[in-house]
Length: 339
Ligand SMILES: NC(=O)c1ccc[n+]([C@@H]2O[C@H](COP(=O)([O-])OP(=O)(O)OC[C@H]3O[C@@H](n4cnc5c(N)ncnc54)[C@H](OP(=O)(O)O)[C@@H]3O)[C@@H](O)[C@H]2O)c1
Image 1 (spheres, rainbow, N blue to C red):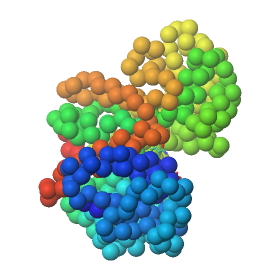
Image 2: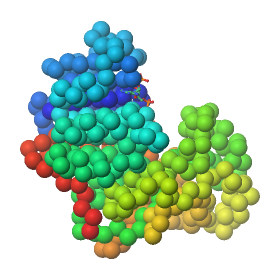
Image 3: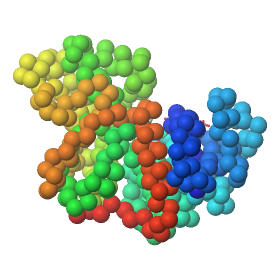
Protein backbone atom coordinates (compact mmCIF):
# COMPACT_ATOMS: atom_id res chain seq x y z
CA UNK A 1 0.00 0.00 0.00
CA UNK A 2 1.15 3.51 -0.83
CA UNK A 3 0.86 6.14 1.91
CA UNK A 4 0.48 9.89 1.43
CA UNK A 5 1.05 12.11 4.47
CA UNK A 6 -0.64 15.50 4.23
CA UNK A 7 0.77 17.94 6.80
CA UNK A 8 4.36 17.80 7.98
CA UNK A 9 4.07 19.64 11.27
CA UNK A 10 4.34 18.07 14.73
CA UNK A 11 2.16 15.05 13.90
CA UNK A 12 3.53 14.51 10.39
CA UNK A 13 7.11 14.52 11.66
CA UNK A 14 6.41 12.27 14.64
CA UNK A 15 4.55 9.86 12.36
CA UNK A 16 7.50 9.68 9.97
CA UNK A 17 9.82 8.93 12.94
CA UNK A 18 7.53 6.11 14.09
CA UNK A 19 7.25 4.70 10.56
CA UNK A 20 11.04 4.68 10.34
CA UNK A 21 11.30 2.75 13.61
CA UNK A 22 8.54 0.27 12.74
CA UNK A 23 9.08 -0.18 9.01
CA UNK A 24 10.10 -3.82 9.17
CA UNK A 25 7.03 -4.61 11.30
CA UNK A 26 4.78 -2.74 8.84
CA UNK A 27 6.35 -4.61 5.92
CA UNK A 28 5.69 -7.89 7.70
CA UNK A 29 1.99 -6.99 7.38
CA UNK A 30 2.23 -5.55 3.88
CA UNK A 31 5.50 -6.17 2.12
CA UNK A 32 4.75 -3.41 -0.42
CA UNK A 33 4.05 -0.73 2.18
CA UNK A 34 5.82 2.56 1.39
CA UNK A 35 5.50 6.30 1.92
CA UNK A 36 5.10 7.81 -1.56
CA UNK A 37 4.25 11.42 -0.73
CA UNK A 38 4.53 14.06 1.98
CA UNK A 39 2.82 17.43 1.62
CA UNK A 40 3.07 20.72 3.51
CA UNK A 41 1.35 24.04 2.86
CA UNK A 42 3.68 25.10 0.06
CA UNK A 43 4.59 21.96 -1.85
CA UNK A 44 5.37 18.25 -1.68
CA UNK A 45 7.77 15.37 -2.01
CA UNK A 46 6.66 12.50 -4.21
CA UNK A 47 8.40 9.30 -5.22
CA UNK A 48 6.31 6.45 -6.59
CA UNK A 49 9.01 3.93 -5.60
CA UNK A 50 8.91 5.13 -1.98
CA UNK A 51 10.53 8.10 -0.26
CA UNK A 52 13.67 7.28 1.69
CA UNK A 53 12.33 8.44 5.06
CA UNK A 54 15.77 8.11 6.70
CA UNK A 55 16.68 11.18 4.62
CA UNK A 56 14.02 13.24 6.41
CA UNK A 57 15.95 12.88 9.65
CA UNK A 58 18.52 15.34 8.37
CA UNK A 59 16.19 18.22 7.47
CA UNK A 60 14.09 20.58 9.59
CA UNK A 61 11.71 21.70 6.80
CA UNK A 62 10.34 19.58 3.96
CA UNK A 63 11.34 22.31 1.49
CA UNK A 64 15.03 21.62 2.26
CA UNK A 65 14.74 18.21 0.54
CA UNK A 66 16.34 18.05 -2.90
CA UNK A 67 13.19 16.58 -4.49
CA UNK A 68 10.73 19.08 -2.95
CA UNK A 69 8.26 20.39 -5.52
CA UNK A 70 7.32 23.94 -4.59
CA UNK A 71 3.72 24.83 -5.47
CA UNK A 72 2.43 21.24 -5.65
CA UNK A 73 -0.62 20.39 -3.52
CA UNK A 74 -2.25 17.35 -1.93
CA UNK A 75 -5.09 17.71 -4.44
CA UNK A 76 -2.61 17.21 -7.32
CA UNK A 77 -1.45 13.89 -5.84
CA UNK A 78 -4.91 12.69 -4.78
CA UNK A 79 -6.32 13.58 -8.19
CA UNK A 80 -3.89 11.23 -9.94
CA UNK A 81 -4.58 8.18 -7.72
CA UNK A 82 -0.93 7.96 -6.69
CA UNK A 83 -1.71 6.60 -3.20
CA UNK A 84 -3.94 4.08 -1.44
CA UNK A 85 -4.01 5.63 2.05
CA UNK A 86 -3.84 9.25 3.19
CA UNK A 87 -2.98 10.46 6.69
CA UNK A 88 -4.54 13.94 6.84
CA UNK A 89 -2.74 16.01 9.49
CA UNK A 90 -3.32 19.64 8.56
CA UNK A 91 -4.42 22.17 11.23
CA UNK A 92 -7.89 21.80 12.76
CA UNK A 93 -10.28 24.45 11.49
CA UNK A 94 -13.76 24.29 13.00
CA UNK A 95 -15.17 27.15 10.91
CA UNK A 96 -15.18 25.44 7.52
CA UNK A 97 -13.00 22.34 8.05
CA UNK A 98 -10.46 23.43 5.45
CA UNK A 99 -8.06 22.46 4.02
CA UNK A 100 -8.67 19.01 5.55
CA UNK A 101 -12.31 18.67 4.50
CA UNK A 102 -11.52 19.03 0.78
CA UNK A 103 -8.56 16.63 1.08
CA UNK A 104 -10.70 14.00 2.83
CA UNK A 105 -13.67 14.37 0.46
CA UNK A 106 -11.44 13.95 -2.58
CA UNK A 107 -9.56 10.96 -1.15
CA UNK A 108 -12.70 9.09 -0.08
CA UNK A 109 -14.50 9.81 -3.34
CA UNK A 110 -11.58 8.06 -5.09
CA UNK A 111 -11.63 5.07 -2.74
CA UNK A 112 -8.47 6.15 -0.90
CA UNK A 113 -8.49 5.16 2.80
CA UNK A 114 -8.25 8.12 5.17
CA UNK A 115 -6.74 8.29 8.64
CA UNK A 116 -6.96 11.63 10.39
CA UNK A 117 -6.35 13.27 13.77
CA UNK A 118 -7.94 16.46 12.34
CA UNK A 119 -11.16 17.29 14.23
CA UNK A 120 -12.46 20.04 11.90
CA UNK A 121 -13.80 17.87 9.05
CA UNK A 122 -15.21 15.33 11.53
CA UNK A 123 -17.04 17.94 13.61
CA UNK A 124 -18.57 19.58 10.55
CA UNK A 125 -19.29 16.66 8.22
CA UNK A 126 -19.06 13.34 10.09
CA UNK A 127 -22.09 11.64 8.55
CA UNK A 128 -21.37 12.88 5.03
CA UNK A 129 -17.77 11.60 5.21
CA UNK A 130 -18.71 8.23 6.70
CA UNK A 131 -21.32 7.76 3.96
CA UNK A 132 -18.76 8.70 1.32
CA UNK A 133 -16.30 6.14 2.76
CA UNK A 134 -19.00 3.46 2.78
CA UNK A 135 -20.11 4.19 -0.79
CA UNK A 136 -16.53 3.99 -2.03
CA UNK A 137 -15.65 0.93 0.07
CA UNK A 138 -12.77 2.53 1.91
CA UNK A 139 -12.00 3.36 5.53
CA UNK A 140 -12.24 6.64 7.40
CA UNK A 141 -10.47 6.17 10.74
CA UNK A 142 -9.90 8.98 13.24
CA UNK A 143 -8.73 7.47 16.53
CA UNK A 144 -6.19 10.27 17.09
CA UNK A 145 -8.79 13.03 16.75
CA UNK A 146 -10.35 12.46 20.18
CA UNK A 147 -8.37 11.90 23.38
CA UNK A 148 -5.09 11.18 21.52
CA UNK A 149 -3.76 7.77 22.48
CA UNK A 150 -6.93 6.53 24.22
CA UNK A 151 -8.35 3.87 21.87
CA UNK A 152 -12.01 4.66 22.44
CA UNK A 153 -13.32 4.16 18.88
CA UNK A 154 -11.33 0.95 18.38
CA UNK A 155 -12.53 -0.38 21.72
CA UNK A 156 -16.18 0.21 20.88
CA UNK A 157 -15.79 -1.03 17.27
CA UNK A 158 -13.96 -4.22 18.22
CA UNK A 159 -14.93 -5.06 21.78
CA UNK A 160 -18.39 -3.60 22.45
CA UNK A 161 -20.08 -4.66 19.22
CA UNK A 162 -23.28 -5.76 20.92
CA UNK A 163 -23.43 -3.03 23.56
CA UNK A 164 -25.55 0.10 23.36
CA UNK A 165 -23.78 3.14 24.78
CA UNK A 166 -26.28 4.97 26.91
CA UNK A 167 -24.11 7.69 28.43
CA UNK A 168 -20.57 8.95 28.08
CA UNK A 169 -18.60 11.43 30.14
CA UNK A 170 -14.99 12.40 30.36
CA UNK A 171 -12.06 14.74 30.60
CA UNK A 172 -11.31 15.49 26.97
CA UNK A 173 -8.83 18.37 27.18
CA UNK A 174 -5.36 18.00 28.69
CA UNK A 175 -4.64 21.73 28.92
CA UNK A 176 -7.60 22.51 31.15
CA UNK A 177 -6.97 19.38 33.20
CA UNK A 178 -3.38 20.49 33.77
CA UNK A 179 -4.54 23.95 34.93
CA UNK A 180 -7.22 22.56 37.26
CA UNK A 181 -4.77 19.96 38.64
CA UNK A 182 -2.18 22.65 39.44
CA UNK A 183 -4.87 24.70 41.16
CA UNK A 184 -5.91 21.59 43.14
CA UNK A 185 -2.45 20.42 44.25
CA UNK A 186 -0.45 23.68 44.46
CA UNK A 187 -3.34 25.90 45.62
CA UNK A 188 -2.48 28.57 43.05
CA UNK A 189 -4.88 30.87 41.18
CA UNK A 190 -6.31 30.18 37.71
CA UNK A 191 -4.20 33.03 36.26
CA UNK A 192 -0.91 31.65 37.64
CA UNK A 193 -1.73 28.06 36.59
CA UNK A 194 -2.59 29.28 33.07
CA UNK A 195 0.65 31.29 32.82
CA UNK A 196 2.63 28.25 33.95
CA UNK A 197 0.87 26.05 31.35
CA UNK A 198 1.70 28.61 28.65
CA UNK A 199 5.37 28.72 29.72
CA UNK A 200 5.55 24.92 29.50
CA UNK A 201 3.94 24.91 26.02
CA UNK A 202 0.87 23.05 27.35
CA UNK A 203 -1.43 26.03 26.68
CA UNK A 204 -1.42 28.19 23.53
CA UNK A 205 -0.64 31.92 23.67
CA UNK A 206 -4.36 32.38 22.89
CA UNK A 207 -5.74 29.68 25.20
CA UNK A 208 -9.44 30.37 24.57
CA UNK A 209 -10.04 27.31 22.36
CA UNK A 210 -9.06 25.09 25.31
CA UNK A 211 -10.10 27.03 28.41
CA UNK A 212 -13.47 28.10 27.03
CA UNK A 213 -14.32 24.43 26.42
CA UNK A 214 -14.51 24.57 22.61
CA UNK A 215 -11.89 21.84 22.00
CA UNK A 216 -13.65 19.49 24.43
CA UNK A 217 -17.01 20.29 22.81
CA UNK A 218 -15.65 19.38 19.34
CA UNK A 219 -14.49 16.01 20.69
CA UNK A 220 -17.87 15.44 22.34
CA UNK A 221 -19.64 16.04 19.01
CA UNK A 222 -17.41 13.46 17.28
CA UNK A 223 -17.97 10.92 20.09
CA UNK A 224 -21.76 11.45 20.01
CA UNK A 225 -21.98 11.04 16.25
CA UNK A 226 -19.53 8.15 15.95
CA UNK A 227 -20.51 6.07 18.97
CA UNK A 228 -24.10 6.96 19.72
CA UNK A 229 -25.60 7.59 16.28
CA UNK A 230 -26.44 11.22 17.04
CA UNK A 231 -26.62 14.01 14.48
CA UNK A 232 -24.96 16.52 16.82
CA UNK A 233 -23.41 19.83 15.82
CA UNK A 234 -21.15 22.10 17.82
CA UNK A 235 -24.07 24.49 18.42
CA UNK A 236 -25.92 21.70 20.21
CA UNK A 237 -23.31 21.60 23.01
CA UNK A 238 -23.96 23.68 26.11
CA UNK A 239 -20.46 24.99 26.87
CA UNK A 240 -19.07 26.54 30.06
CA UNK A 241 -15.29 26.93 30.28
CA UNK A 242 -13.00 27.18 33.31
CA UNK A 243 -12.20 30.93 33.38
CA UNK A 244 -14.55 31.45 36.33
CA UNK A 245 -13.05 28.72 38.55
CA UNK A 246 -11.53 30.28 41.67
CA UNK A 247 -8.99 28.85 44.11
CA UNK A 248 -11.67 29.23 46.79
CA UNK A 249 -14.05 26.95 44.89
CA UNK A 250 -11.31 24.34 44.37
CA UNK A 251 -10.29 24.41 48.07
CA UNK A 252 -13.88 24.12 49.24
CA UNK A 253 -14.42 21.12 46.94
CA UNK A 254 -11.15 19.54 48.05
CA UNK A 255 -12.13 19.71 51.71
CA UNK A 256 -15.22 17.66 50.82
CA UNK A 257 -13.11 15.15 48.81
CA UNK A 258 -14.07 16.47 45.38
CA UNK A 259 -12.02 17.92 42.54
CA UNK A 260 -13.38 20.37 39.98
CA UNK A 261 -12.88 18.99 36.47
CA UNK A 262 -13.98 20.15 33.01
CA UNK A 263 -16.32 17.32 32.07
CA UNK A 264 -17.88 16.59 28.71
CA UNK A 265 -21.13 14.64 28.99
CA UNK A 266 -23.33 12.97 26.40
CA UNK A 267 -26.65 12.13 27.97
CA UNK A 268 -29.93 13.32 26.50
CA UNK A 269 -28.06 16.44 25.49
CA UNK A 270 -24.40 17.38 25.13
CA UNK A 271 -22.61 19.50 27.71
CA UNK A 272 -19.09 20.64 28.56
CA UNK A 273 -18.87 22.28 31.98
CA UNK A 274 -16.84 22.29 35.21
CA UNK A 275 -18.22 19.62 37.56
CA UNK A 276 -17.52 18.31 41.03
CA UNK A 277 -15.94 14.85 40.70
CA UNK A 278 -15.33 12.61 43.76
CA UNK A 279 -11.56 12.21 44.12
CA UNK A 280 -11.88 8.41 44.11
CA UNK A 281 -13.92 8.29 40.87
CA UNK A 282 -11.97 6.63 38.00
CA UNK A 283 -12.24 9.71 35.77
CA UNK A 284 -10.65 11.91 38.44
CA UNK A 285 -7.24 11.90 36.73
CA UNK A 286 -4.73 14.72 36.91
CA UNK A 287 -2.10 16.59 34.92
CA UNK A 288 -2.52 16.41 31.15
CA UNK A 289 -4.24 13.00 31.31
CA UNK A 290 -7.62 12.47 29.67
CA UNK A 291 -10.30 10.00 30.80
CA UNK A 292 -13.42 8.63 29.15
CA UNK A 293 -16.17 6.86 31.10
CA UNK A 294 -18.58 4.83 28.97
CA UNK A 295 -21.88 3.48 30.31
CA UNK A 296 -23.48 0.70 28.26
CA UNK A 297 -26.48 -1.59 28.60
CA UNK A 298 -24.38 -4.76 28.99
CA UNK A 299 -20.87 -3.93 30.22
CA UNK A 300 -22.31 -1.18 32.46
CA UNK A 301 -19.21 0.92 33.06
CA UNK A 302 -15.80 1.14 31.42
CA UNK A 303 -13.22 3.86 32.04
CA UNK A 304 -10.26 4.58 29.78
CA UNK A 305 -7.38 6.81 30.89
CA UNK A 306 -4.45 8.05 28.83
CA UNK A 307 -2.69 10.92 27.11
CA UNK A 308 -4.89 13.11 24.95
CA UNK A 309 -2.33 14.86 22.76
CA UNK A 310 1.34 15.10 21.88
CA UNK A 311 3.60 12.31 20.59
CA UNK A 312 1.34 9.69 22.15
CA UNK A 313 -1.26 10.49 19.44
CA UNK A 314 0.99 8.62 16.98
CA UNK A 315 0.00 5.38 18.73
CA UNK A 316 -3.59 5.95 17.55
CA UNK A 317 -2.62 6.96 14.01
CA UNK A 318 -0.31 3.97 13.63
CA UNK A 319 -2.97 1.59 14.92
CA UNK A 320 -5.44 2.96 12.36
CA UNK A 321 -2.81 2.51 9.67
CA UNK A 322 -2.18 -1.10 10.69
CA UNK A 323 -5.95 -1.73 10.74
CA UNK A 324 -6.12 -0.62 7.10
CA UNK A 325 -3.04 -2.64 6.11
CA UNK A 326 -4.44 -5.78 7.72
CA UNK A 327 -7.86 -5.37 6.11
CA UNK A 328 -6.60 -4.55 2.64
CA UNK A 329 -7.88 -7.85 1.29
CA UNK A 330 -11.41 -7.12 2.44
CA UNK A 331 -13.56 -5.36 -0.09
CA UNK A 332 -15.73 -3.49 2.38
CA UNK A 333 -15.02 -1.43 5.46
CA UNK A 334 -18.07 -1.13 7.59
CA UNK A 335 -18.64 1.86 9.85
CA UNK A 336 -19.23 1.17 13.57
CA UNK A 337 -22.72 -0.23 14.04
CA UNK A 338 -24.99 1.69 16.41
CA UNK A 339 -26.92 -0.84 18.47
N1 LIG B 1 -0.14 18.10 18.00
C1 LIG B 1 -0.87 17.24 18.69
O1 LIG B 1 -0.50 16.80 19.80
C2 LIG B 1 -2.18 16.73 18.14
C3 LIG B 1 -2.91 15.75 18.84
C4 LIG B 1 -4.11 15.27 18.31
C5 LIG B 1 -4.57 15.79 17.12
N2 LIG B 1 -3.86 16.76 16.46
C6 LIG B 1 -4.37 17.27 15.19
O2 LIG B 1 -3.48 16.86 14.14
C7 LIG B 1 -3.44 17.86 13.13
C8 LIG B 1 -2.00 18.27 12.92
O3 LIG B 1 -1.49 18.81 14.11
P1 LIG B 1 0.01 19.36 14.23
O4 LIG B 1 0.23 19.63 15.66
O5 LIG B 1 0.92 18.48 13.47
O6 LIG B 1 -0.14 20.75 13.44
P2 LIG B 1 1.04 21.66 12.89
O7 LIG B 1 2.32 21.39 13.60
O8 LIG B 1 0.50 23.05 12.83
O9 LIG B 1 1.25 21.13 11.37
C9 LIG B 1 0.30 21.32 10.38
C10 LIG B 1 0.92 20.95 9.04
O10 LIG B 1 -0.09 21.09 8.05
C11 LIG B 1 0.50 21.75 6.93
N3 LIG B 1 -0.52 22.38 6.11
C12 LIG B 1 -1.25 23.50 6.32
N4 LIG B 1 -2.06 23.74 5.28
C13 LIG B 1 -1.83 22.74 4.38
C14 LIG B 1 -2.33 22.44 3.09
N5 LIG B 1 -3.27 23.20 2.50
N6 LIG B 1 -1.86 21.34 2.44
C15 LIG B 1 -0.91 20.57 3.00
N7 LIG B 1 -0.38 20.79 4.24
C16 LIG B 1 -0.84 21.89 4.89
C17 LIG B 1 1.48 22.73 7.52
O11 LIG B 1 2.39 23.13 6.51
P3 LIG B 1 3.66 24.10 6.80
O12 LIG B 1 4.68 23.19 7.48
O13 LIG B 1 4.08 24.51 5.43
O14 LIG B 1 3.15 25.20 7.65
C18 LIG B 1 2.09 21.85 8.61
O15 LIG B 1 3.10 21.05 8.06
C19 LIG B 1 -4.34 19.00 13.61
O16 LIG B 1 -5.59 18.88 13.00
C20 LIG B 1 -4.42 18.78 15.11
O17 LIG B 1 -5.62 19.28 15.67
C21 LIG B 1 -2.68 17.22 16.95
